[in-house]
Image 1: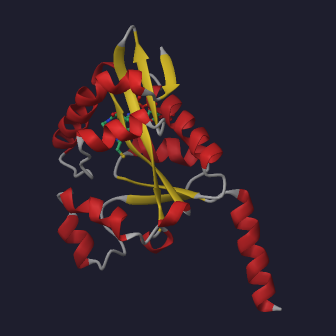
Image 2 (image 1 turned 90 degrees about the vertical axis):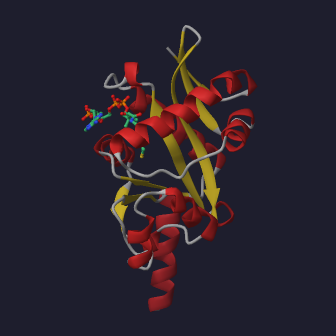
Length: 188
Ligand SMILES: CC(C)(COP(=O)(O)OP(=O)(O)OC[C@H]1O[C@@H](n2cnc3c(N)ncnc32)[C@H](O)[C@@H]1OP(=O)(O)O)[C@@H](O)C(=O)NCCC(=O)NCCS
């Protein structure tokens, strides 16, 4: 199996990826921030995604998004082709997309919203911690992605403070150190 940073050669898989994202969400009865073919194609051609393939067949996918002017990064749209699940593919893809995010945006906080146990396990192994939504980006564009979700009404009723998804956040060590230093200065 090959797990690579995306490039134009992976554009041939974009329809299959989008369709599987939609079908999986339907099967789970959960919502997703639906992404257009154009949006996913841009992520792929700009090298902002990880694609897994085997013998020229698509196996898995995940992409990078930035919010709040690059202060926050999300590794979104994780999807593994049903025939390849439960073999550790998502773990490998998330590791790669996480490393790529850290290289491209070393200062950024990395976050995710999920209802899935598999993703929670992978994220916590990578050092993410569960948080409340106010710790995440407040970028309007990010939250408007939730409009396509079946649970959007719940999110709005709760003033965007919580919903059915668990929020998880990775804070780079430097940021933590800086925050502590800032707090110590404030106290002094
Ligand atoms: C979620 C998904 C990406 C997992 O892919 P995968 O390649 O099967 O995952 P992995 O084999 O790497 O498993 C990672 C961990 O999650 C566990 N896991 C996998 N699927 C699981 C499930 N459905 N329920 C509970 N745990 C699960 C595995 O046992 C493993 O745990 P371990 O490290 O303790 O052994 C895949 O099922 C999928 O594409 N689902 C549809 C889309 C989706 O839900 N995306 C996530 C949106 S946030």
